[in-house]
Structure formats: structure tokens, C-alpha cells
Image (cartoon, rainbow, N blue to C red):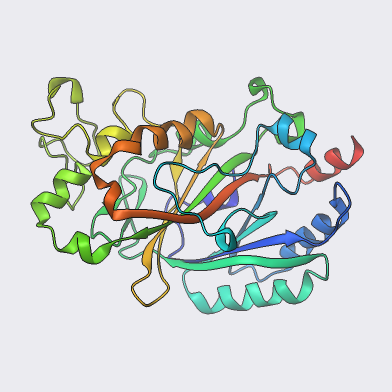
Length: 318
């Protein structure tokens, strides 16, 4: 299981640090090996996860992994300074101070083979567990995380790469992480009534469904074909239209605040297949009514290695 998913309730604070390799050889395995060993020596009070971007791999390796740079979607305005990257390092803890210390320690130990491409700090207001799921309150004042699985078994089914997927043998047991930096128009949002906001989301602020279904259950949208209870273009109805087949992703998102009104969401999700996971959901959301409040400005796709310590050596030996 990727380190970022071992606890159903994510730590309340996070720092995303994205690095680029300064090595120019086609496959800088030695530099990555050094970086990973430096991470292993960081304080144990900080949970650290790693993702590898398509740009680190050779073209052939990335193609065999079915990993590419995150494409643009409708409404995206990506800033190149905060998009993509060779390696993502995610630090998480209950407090920001040990995260800052660990990140600074890594920057001092990672050597000349790496440079910082971008970074962003995040936090989870009202971070809690309900029904085996980790929930938090987003900048739009709504609780989120209800769509996550409530068991480790289902989490594994959604996120871990399997041997029958046709991907390289060394990737089995790994995962794919999507990170999206989504700026939220909170002032525009707050000008709407709570009822209007709930119609846009498709849930009550506390998570209950608009048709009265409890928060920890899934409504049957087939009984509301015209969207009289839950609008057809609401966020949750487009994201997960079939209650029997929830999107095969697990979310681990954080809020951010850069100041000067730049607030939003570090949307993060894990899956074993990018096309059937995040991309299928994102394409359904292209015409959601909430789109005018959202602006994606950065992020990337990353391969999360399996816990097996020899996956990198298998790449090097090929």
C-alpha cells in the first residue's frame, strides 16, 4: 500500500515538494537511488510518500507504464512553474514544523542531482474519521471524502496495480497519483445561498444526499431521471453516476492558502489505472455547473512505486 494511504485519516498537514533531475543521461537511476536513500533517513515523525513523473523515465519505459504528462482538460490554465516534474515528495504530519524541518533536511541531502521545481503546503480543516473514511472540510465549507472506500481491502482493489494490467512487472503493487492545484473562487461561491451551493454540489454541507439518503450510503439516481432532487449537472452526480460502480479512485485532498485571495484545493487521488480512474471522472465533469468556480493551475501525474525495495534495481538491470 502506498505510504500516503496507510491511514484512512490522512495527517492534517502536508507539503508537496516536486523535483527535477539535473542529470542529463537517459535514465538517472543513481540520482534517484541517492534521493530515496536520503528520504529513508528523514525523521520518522513525518510520513513521506514518493511519486515518479513520466519525464524521469525514458520514453520507452514511460510508454510501457502508460504514464504521460498530465494533459490539459476543459477550463485548465496550467502554470508551467507549478506543473509536472520528475519526482514528487509528499511530507505529511499533524504539525507543519516537522514537515518543514524534514523538507529542509532533504534539500540539504539530495545533492546536486536535483533542483526544486515547485512546492505547496496544504492542510485539512475538520480532519476526522466517519464510518471508516477520512473526511475533511474543503474551502467551500462542505465535508468531502464520503466516496472513499471504508475498508483496506477495497482501497487496495482501487489503487494497486495488478499483474493482469499489461504493465511492467516491476510496477505491480504500485499505484498512480494525480495531483491537481485547483484555485477556488471562494468569494463568488460565498455570495450564493447555502441551498444554491448544495444544488451545485449535489449534497448537503454535512454530506447527506439531497433526496434524503444518508451520507454513508449511495442514492439511486435512476429514480430521479430528470434531476428534480439532484440536478443532472451537479458535481457528485456527474462524478459518480452509478451507485453500484463507484469511481475506482481514493482521494487524499488538502486545502491551501497562498494569501492574496489565492485559496483552493490540492486535489490528490490514487488509482491503479489513470484512464478508468481520474480521467474518466474528469471527462464527466467537463460540463458540471460548478465549473465556473474552479480553475486548475498546476499539478501532475506520478507513478507511486511498490513497497518492494528492489523495483528500482529491476529497472536498472533491464
